[in-house]
Image (cartoon, rainbow, N blue to C red; front, side, top):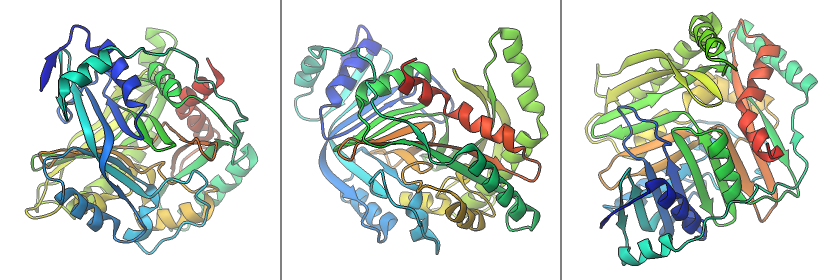
Length: 422
Protein backbone atom coordinates (compact mmCIF):
# COMPACT_ATOMS: atom_id res chain seq x y z
CA UNK A 1 0.00 0.00 0.00
CA UNK A 2 1.43 3.38 -1.04
CA UNK A 3 0.77 6.74 0.64
CA UNK A 4 1.66 10.26 -0.46
CA UNK A 5 4.00 12.20 1.85
CA UNK A 6 4.19 15.96 2.25
CA UNK A 7 7.66 15.77 3.82
CA UNK A 8 9.41 12.45 3.30
CA UNK A 9 12.48 13.32 5.40
CA UNK A 10 10.36 14.30 8.40
CA UNK A 11 8.31 11.12 7.98
CA UNK A 12 11.52 9.04 7.75
CA UNK A 13 12.77 10.47 11.06
CA UNK A 14 9.47 9.68 12.77
CA UNK A 15 9.59 6.20 11.22
CA UNK A 16 13.13 5.68 12.56
CA UNK A 17 11.96 6.68 16.04
CA UNK A 18 9.04 4.24 15.71
CA UNK A 19 11.27 1.45 14.37
CA UNK A 20 13.75 1.68 17.24
CA UNK A 21 11.17 0.34 19.71
CA UNK A 22 11.14 -3.09 18.03
CA UNK A 23 13.56 -5.84 19.08
CA UNK A 24 14.59 -6.35 15.44
CA UNK A 25 14.94 -3.27 13.25
CA UNK A 26 16.83 -2.22 10.15
CA UNK A 27 16.87 1.37 8.90
CA UNK A 28 18.88 1.98 5.71
CA UNK A 29 19.35 5.52 4.38
CA UNK A 30 21.12 6.38 1.11
CA UNK A 31 21.21 10.06 2.11
CA UNK A 32 20.38 11.15 -1.41
CA UNK A 33 23.38 9.45 -3.02
CA UNK A 34 22.45 7.99 -6.39
CA UNK A 35 24.26 5.64 -8.73
CA UNK A 36 23.42 3.12 -11.43
CA UNK A 37 23.34 0.20 -8.99
CA UNK A 38 21.15 1.20 -6.03
CA UNK A 39 17.56 2.45 -6.10
CA UNK A 40 16.44 2.71 -2.47
CA UNK A 41 16.11 6.05 -0.67
CA UNK A 42 15.08 4.86 2.80
CA UNK A 43 14.30 1.25 3.67
CA UNK A 44 12.86 0.21 7.04
CA UNK A 45 12.17 -3.31 8.28
CA UNK A 46 10.89 -4.04 11.79
CA UNK A 47 9.62 -6.92 13.88
CA UNK A 48 10.83 -10.48 13.38
CA UNK A 49 8.20 -12.83 11.98
CA UNK A 50 11.05 -15.34 11.56
CA UNK A 51 14.75 -15.25 12.42
CA UNK A 52 17.98 -16.87 11.30
CA UNK A 53 20.95 -16.93 13.69
CA UNK A 54 24.23 -18.54 12.67
CA UNK A 55 25.29 -21.47 14.85
CA UNK A 56 28.79 -21.96 13.40
CA UNK A 57 27.86 -24.70 10.93
CA UNK A 58 27.02 -24.34 7.21
CA UNK A 59 25.86 -20.76 7.67
CA UNK A 60 25.53 -19.88 3.99
CA UNK A 61 23.67 -23.07 3.02
CA UNK A 62 21.39 -22.84 6.05
CA UNK A 63 20.66 -19.19 5.33
CA UNK A 64 19.74 -20.05 1.74
CA UNK A 65 17.23 -22.58 3.05
CA UNK A 66 15.82 -19.85 5.32
CA UNK A 67 15.50 -17.47 2.35
CA UNK A 68 13.88 -20.15 0.20
CA UNK A 69 11.37 -20.87 2.99
CA UNK A 70 10.17 -17.24 2.89
CA UNK A 71 9.68 -16.36 -0.79
CA UNK A 72 8.56 -12.84 -1.60
CA UNK A 73 10.04 -11.42 1.61
CA UNK A 74 12.53 -8.71 2.37
CA UNK A 75 15.22 -10.29 4.56
CA UNK A 76 17.68 -7.81 6.13
CA UNK A 77 20.68 -8.78 8.25
CA UNK A 78 24.44 -9.04 8.53
CA UNK A 79 27.40 -11.36 7.94
CA UNK A 80 30.33 -11.22 10.39
CA UNK A 81 33.93 -11.29 9.19
CA UNK A 82 34.70 -14.48 11.14
CA UNK A 83 32.54 -16.53 8.78
CA UNK A 84 35.86 -16.84 6.96
CA UNK A 85 36.52 -19.74 9.34
CA UNK A 86 33.72 -21.70 7.67
CA UNK A 87 34.91 -20.81 4.18
CA UNK A 88 38.63 -21.52 4.67
CA UNK A 89 40.67 -23.45 7.20
CA UNK A 90 41.10 -20.43 9.45
CA UNK A 91 40.36 -19.53 13.05
CA UNK A 92 39.93 -16.45 15.25
CA UNK A 93 42.02 -16.43 18.40
CA UNK A 94 40.46 -13.40 20.12
CA UNK A 95 37.42 -13.31 22.40
CA UNK A 96 34.07 -12.25 20.97
CA UNK A 97 33.80 -9.32 23.41
CA UNK A 98 30.97 -7.57 21.59
CA UNK A 99 29.01 -10.87 21.51
CA UNK A 100 27.30 -10.66 18.12
CA UNK A 101 26.54 -13.87 16.18
CA UNK A 102 28.42 -14.53 12.94
CA UNK A 103 25.22 -13.87 11.01
CA UNK A 104 21.69 -12.71 11.77
CA UNK A 105 18.75 -12.20 9.38
CA UNK A 106 15.04 -11.73 9.91
CA UNK A 107 11.77 -11.74 8.00
CA UNK A 108 10.10 -8.47 9.05
CA UNK A 109 6.52 -7.98 10.15
CA UNK A 110 6.52 -4.57 8.44
CA UNK A 111 8.61 -3.03 5.66
CA UNK A 112 8.57 0.58 4.52
CA UNK A 113 10.08 1.96 1.33
CA UNK A 114 10.24 5.74 1.61
CA UNK A 115 10.81 7.72 -1.57
CA UNK A 116 10.90 11.42 -2.28
CA UNK A 117 7.13 11.82 -2.19
CA UNK A 118 5.60 8.58 -0.96
CA UNK A 119 5.90 5.55 1.30
CA UNK A 120 5.08 1.98 0.38
CA UNK A 121 4.18 -0.21 3.35
CA UNK A 122 3.97 -3.99 3.51
CA UNK A 123 2.35 -5.57 6.58
CA UNK A 124 -0.91 -5.73 8.48
CA UNK A 125 -3.05 -2.54 8.41
CA UNK A 126 -0.67 -0.11 6.64
CA UNK A 127 -3.00 2.83 7.29
CA UNK A 128 -2.71 2.27 11.04
CA UNK A 129 1.08 2.18 10.71
CA UNK A 130 1.08 5.54 8.92
CA UNK A 131 -1.08 7.06 11.65
CA UNK A 132 1.15 5.60 14.36
CA UNK A 133 4.31 6.94 12.73
CA UNK A 134 2.85 10.39 12.10
CA UNK A 135 1.87 10.57 15.77
CA UNK A 136 5.38 9.61 16.90
CA UNK A 137 7.37 12.40 18.55
CA UNK A 138 10.98 12.59 17.40
CA UNK A 139 13.52 12.95 20.21
CA UNK A 140 16.46 15.24 19.68
CA UNK A 141 18.90 14.54 22.46
CA UNK A 142 22.65 14.01 22.72
CA UNK A 143 24.29 10.60 22.19
CA UNK A 144 24.75 10.49 25.94
CA UNK A 145 27.98 8.50 25.82
CA UNK A 146 29.40 7.65 29.23
CA UNK A 147 32.60 5.68 29.51
CA UNK A 148 36.28 5.86 28.73
CA UNK A 149 37.25 5.29 25.11
CA UNK A 150 40.47 3.28 24.91
CA UNK A 151 42.92 2.22 22.21
CA UNK A 152 43.40 -1.54 21.99
CA UNK A 153 46.72 -0.86 20.22
CA UNK A 154 48.92 2.01 21.34
CA UNK A 155 51.07 4.06 18.99
CA UNK A 156 54.24 2.06 19.65
CA UNK A 157 52.51 -1.32 19.24
CA UNK A 158 50.96 -0.17 15.96
CA UNK A 159 54.38 0.70 14.55
CA UNK A 160 55.89 -2.58 15.74
CA UNK A 161 53.15 -4.61 14.06
CA UNK A 162 53.36 -2.47 10.95
CA UNK A 163 57.07 -3.28 10.61
CA UNK A 164 56.42 -6.99 11.13
CA UNK A 165 53.75 -7.04 8.41
CA UNK A 166 55.99 -5.14 6.00
CA UNK A 167 58.61 -7.79 6.61
CA UNK A 168 56.08 -10.43 5.53
CA UNK A 169 55.58 -8.40 2.35
CA UNK A 170 59.34 -8.29 1.75
CA UNK A 171 59.49 -12.08 2.23
CA UNK A 172 56.72 -12.55 -0.33
CA UNK A 173 54.07 -13.94 2.03
CA UNK A 174 51.62 -11.24 0.91
CA UNK A 175 51.84 -8.11 -1.21
CA UNK A 176 48.99 -6.23 0.47
CA UNK A 177 47.32 -6.63 3.87
CA UNK A 178 44.62 -4.68 5.66
CA UNK A 179 45.64 -4.07 9.27
CA UNK A 180 42.98 -2.83 11.70
CA UNK A 181 42.88 -1.59 15.28
CA UNK A 182 40.06 -1.37 17.81
CA UNK A 183 38.81 1.53 19.91
CA UNK A 184 36.55 0.42 22.73
CA UNK A 185 34.85 1.29 25.99
CA UNK A 186 33.88 -1.11 28.77
CA UNK A 187 31.06 -0.32 31.23
CA UNK A 188 29.83 2.11 28.58
CA UNK A 189 26.40 3.56 28.07
CA UNK A 190 24.88 5.63 25.28
CA UNK A 191 21.60 6.27 23.49
CA UNK A 192 21.97 4.20 20.30
CA UNK A 193 19.26 6.02 18.35
CA UNK A 194 20.55 9.50 19.14
CA UNK A 195 24.12 8.31 18.50
CA UNK A 196 23.11 7.06 15.06
CA UNK A 197 21.26 10.28 14.25
CA UNK A 198 24.31 12.31 15.18
CA UNK A 199 26.61 10.01 13.19
CA UNK A 200 24.43 10.30 10.12
CA UNK A 201 24.43 14.09 10.44
CA UNK A 202 28.22 14.28 10.85
CA UNK A 203 28.94 11.67 8.16
CA UNK A 204 26.05 11.04 5.74
CA UNK A 205 26.93 8.13 3.44
CA UNK A 206 25.21 5.95 0.83
CA UNK A 207 24.97 2.93 3.15
CA UNK A 208 24.04 4.56 6.43
CA UNK A 209 22.33 2.07 8.74
CA UNK A 210 20.73 1.74 12.17
CA UNK A 211 20.41 -1.98 12.94
CA UNK A 212 19.00 -3.40 16.15
CA UNK A 213 19.08 -7.05 17.25
CA UNK A 214 17.72 -7.25 20.78
CA UNK A 215 20.16 -5.27 22.90
CA UNK A 216 22.87 -5.23 20.21
CA UNK A 217 23.23 -2.28 17.84
CA UNK A 218 25.05 -1.57 14.58
CA UNK A 219 25.40 2.17 13.91
CA UNK A 220 26.97 2.49 10.50
CA UNK A 221 28.20 5.28 8.24
CA UNK A 222 29.67 2.99 5.60
CA UNK A 223 30.46 4.49 2.19
CA UNK A 224 31.34 1.17 0.53
CA UNK A 225 29.27 -1.34 -1.43
CA UNK A 226 30.52 -4.88 -0.85
CA UNK A 227 28.33 -6.71 -3.34
CA UNK A 228 24.93 -6.36 -4.93
CA UNK A 229 22.82 -8.41 -7.32
CA UNK A 230 20.44 -6.63 -9.66
CA UNK A 231 18.74 -9.09 -11.97
CA UNK A 232 21.61 -11.20 -13.26
CA UNK A 233 24.28 -8.51 -12.74
CA UNK A 234 26.68 -8.63 -9.80
CA UNK A 235 28.37 -5.40 -8.71
CA UNK A 236 31.20 -4.77 -6.26
CA UNK A 237 32.66 -1.32 -5.59
CA UNK A 238 35.83 -1.63 -3.50
CA UNK A 239 37.29 1.45 -1.85
CA UNK A 240 41.01 1.91 -1.41
CA UNK A 241 42.54 5.37 -1.24
CA UNK A 242 41.56 8.05 1.26
CA UNK A 243 42.19 11.79 1.57
CA UNK A 244 40.78 14.41 3.97
CA UNK A 245 38.38 17.14 2.86
CA UNK A 246 39.87 20.58 2.44
CA UNK A 247 38.94 23.63 4.47
CA UNK A 248 38.43 25.68 1.30
CA UNK A 249 37.20 24.78 -2.17
CA UNK A 250 40.65 25.32 -3.64
CA UNK A 251 42.33 23.14 -1.02
CA UNK A 252 39.64 20.48 -1.47
CA UNK A 253 40.31 20.28 -5.21
CA UNK A 254 44.04 20.05 -4.60
CA UNK A 255 43.56 17.14 -2.20
CA UNK A 256 41.41 15.34 -4.76
CA UNK A 257 44.05 15.84 -7.44
CA UNK A 258 46.77 14.56 -5.12
CA UNK A 259 44.70 11.47 -4.23
CA UNK A 260 44.10 10.62 -7.89
CA UNK A 261 47.84 10.89 -8.62
CA UNK A 262 49.13 9.15 -5.47
CA UNK A 263 50.96 6.01 -6.71
CA UNK A 264 50.58 4.18 -3.39
CA UNK A 265 46.81 4.77 -3.18
CA UNK A 266 46.31 3.91 -6.85
CA UNK A 267 48.30 0.68 -6.59
CA UNK A 268 46.33 -0.36 -3.48
CA UNK A 269 43.06 0.16 -5.29
CA UNK A 270 44.15 -1.76 -8.39
CA UNK A 271 45.39 -4.67 -6.24
CA UNK A 272 41.97 -4.93 -4.61
CA UNK A 273 40.25 -4.68 -7.99
CA UNK A 274 42.27 -7.70 -9.17
CA UNK A 275 41.25 -9.58 -6.02
CA UNK A 276 37.57 -8.74 -6.51
CA UNK A 277 37.75 -9.81 -10.15
CA UNK A 278 39.20 -13.12 -9.05
CA UNK A 279 36.52 -13.58 -6.37
CA UNK A 280 33.68 -12.79 -8.78
CA UNK A 281 35.02 -15.24 -11.36
CA UNK A 282 33.84 -18.08 -9.09
CA UNK A 283 30.23 -16.94 -9.55
CA UNK A 284 30.35 -15.50 -13.07
CA UNK A 285 29.43 -16.62 -16.52
CA UNK A 286 32.80 -17.08 -18.29
CA UNK A 287 34.18 -13.93 -19.86
CA UNK A 288 31.76 -11.50 -18.19
CA UNK A 289 33.93 -10.08 -15.38
CA UNK A 290 34.94 -6.51 -16.13
CA UNK A 291 35.84 -3.25 -14.40
CA UNK A 292 33.75 -0.54 -16.09
CA UNK A 293 35.00 2.20 -13.76
CA UNK A 294 38.44 2.49 -12.18
CA UNK A 295 39.80 4.95 -9.64
CA UNK A 296 36.83 7.29 -9.51
CA UNK A 297 36.90 9.90 -6.75
CA UNK A 298 33.79 9.88 -4.57
CA UNK A 299 33.56 12.77 -2.14
CA UNK A 300 31.82 12.44 1.22
CA UNK A 301 31.42 14.93 4.05
CA UNK A 302 34.47 13.64 5.92
CA UNK A 303 36.77 12.25 3.20
CA UNK A 304 37.51 11.74 -0.49
CA UNK A 305 37.78 8.10 -1.59
CA UNK A 306 39.08 6.20 -4.62
CA UNK A 307 36.32 3.85 -5.75
CA UNK A 308 36.38 1.25 -8.53
CA UNK A 309 33.51 -0.79 -9.93
CA UNK A 310 33.71 -4.46 -10.90
CA UNK A 311 30.77 -6.28 -12.49
CA UNK A 312 29.87 -9.64 -13.99
CA UNK A 313 26.91 -11.76 -14.99
CA UNK A 314 26.01 -14.46 -12.48
CA UNK A 315 26.15 -17.97 -13.85
CA UNK A 316 22.90 -19.86 -14.14
CA UNK A 317 21.72 -21.85 -11.16
CA UNK A 318 23.99 -20.28 -8.55
CA UNK A 319 22.26 -19.26 -5.30
CA UNK A 320 22.44 -15.83 -3.68
CA UNK A 321 24.30 -17.06 -0.60
CA UNK A 322 26.78 -19.05 -2.69
CA UNK A 323 27.61 -15.85 -4.58
CA UNK A 324 28.26 -14.06 -1.31
CA UNK A 325 30.27 -16.96 0.09
CA UNK A 326 32.48 -16.93 -3.02
CA UNK A 327 33.46 -13.31 -2.41
CA UNK A 328 33.47 -13.17 1.40
CA UNK A 329 35.00 -11.50 3.39
CA UNK A 330 35.19 -8.24 1.41
CA UNK A 331 38.46 -8.03 -0.50
CA UNK A 332 39.13 -4.44 0.54
CA UNK A 333 39.32 -5.57 4.18
CA UNK A 334 41.65 -8.54 3.73
CA UNK A 335 44.57 -8.37 1.31
CA UNK A 336 46.29 -10.42 -1.34
CA UNK A 337 46.74 -13.31 -1.56
CA UNK A 338 43.52 -13.39 0.40
CA UNK A 339 43.98 -16.50 2.54
CA UNK A 340 47.57 -15.62 3.48
CA UNK A 341 46.44 -12.10 4.39
CA UNK A 342 43.66 -13.42 6.63
CA UNK A 343 46.10 -15.77 8.37
CA UNK A 344 48.39 -12.82 9.16
CA UNK A 345 45.43 -10.69 10.27
CA UNK A 346 44.54 -13.34 12.85
CA UNK A 347 48.16 -13.57 13.96
CA UNK A 348 48.88 -9.85 14.32
CA UNK A 349 45.66 -7.98 15.10
CA UNK A 350 44.70 -7.57 18.76
CA UNK A 351 40.90 -7.84 18.46
CA UNK A 352 38.33 -10.12 16.93
CA UNK A 353 36.72 -8.33 14.02
CA UNK A 354 33.24 -9.83 14.37
CA UNK A 355 30.67 -7.76 12.49
CA UNK A 356 33.33 -5.19 11.58
CA UNK A 357 34.58 -5.67 7.99
CA UNK A 358 31.73 -8.08 7.37
CA UNK A 359 28.64 -7.13 5.36
CA UNK A 360 25.28 -5.49 6.17
CA UNK A 361 22.22 -5.24 3.95
CA UNK A 362 19.26 -7.20 2.63
CA UNK A 363 17.86 -9.81 0.28
CA UNK A 364 14.88 -8.50 -1.69
CA UNK A 365 11.60 -10.23 -2.68
CA UNK A 366 12.76 -10.21 -6.32
CA UNK A 367 15.83 -12.33 -5.56
CA UNK A 368 18.24 -9.40 -5.57
CA UNK A 369 20.48 -8.25 -2.74
CA UNK A 370 22.66 -5.30 -1.71
CA UNK A 371 25.30 -5.34 1.03
CA UNK A 372 27.72 -2.73 2.31
CA UNK A 373 31.10 -3.32 3.92
CA UNK A 374 30.82 -2.77 7.68
CA UNK A 375 33.31 0.07 8.15
CA UNK A 376 33.03 3.52 9.83
CA UNK A 377 30.68 1.71 12.21
CA UNK A 378 30.02 1.56 15.95
CA UNK A 379 28.99 -1.73 17.54
CA UNK A 380 27.27 -1.57 20.91
CA UNK A 381 26.08 -4.32 23.23
CA UNK A 382 23.81 -2.58 25.74
CA UNK A 383 23.51 -5.64 27.99
CA UNK A 384 27.28 -6.12 28.25
CA UNK A 385 27.82 -2.33 28.13
CA UNK A 386 30.58 -2.80 25.57
CA UNK A 387 31.18 -0.30 22.76
CA UNK A 388 33.57 -0.96 19.90
CA UNK A 389 34.66 0.41 16.56
CA UNK A 390 37.65 -0.37 14.39
CA UNK A 391 39.57 1.36 11.64
CA UNK A 392 42.29 0.12 9.34
CA UNK A 393 44.21 0.55 6.15
CA UNK A 394 46.18 -1.34 3.57
CA UNK A 395 49.87 -1.99 4.05
CA UNK A 396 51.94 -2.39 0.90
CA UNK A 397 55.68 -2.44 0.24
CA UNK A 398 55.90 1.35 0.00
CA UNK A 399 53.46 2.19 2.81
CA UNK A 400 54.52 4.78 5.38
CA UNK A 401 53.55 3.85 8.98
CA UNK A 402 52.95 7.42 10.14
CA UNK A 403 50.67 8.18 7.20
CA UNK A 404 48.78 4.91 7.65
CA UNK A 405 48.28 5.58 11.34
CA UNK A 406 46.96 9.07 10.56
CA UNK A 407 44.63 7.56 7.95
CA UNK A 408 43.18 5.22 10.60
CA UNK A 409 42.38 8.23 12.77
CA UNK A 410 40.92 10.09 9.78
CA UNK A 411 38.59 7.18 9.03
CA UNK A 412 37.44 7.21 12.64
CA UNK A 413 37.07 10.99 12.80
CA UNK A 414 33.27 11.05 12.63
CA UNK A 415 32.98 8.31 15.24
CA UNK A 416 35.31 10.15 17.63
CA UNK A 417 33.39 13.40 17.08
CA UNK A 418 30.04 11.80 17.86
CA UNK A 419 31.24 10.20 21.08
CA UNK A 420 32.97 13.39 22.21
CA UNK A 421 29.77 15.35 21.57
CA UNK A 422 31.20 17.68 18.97
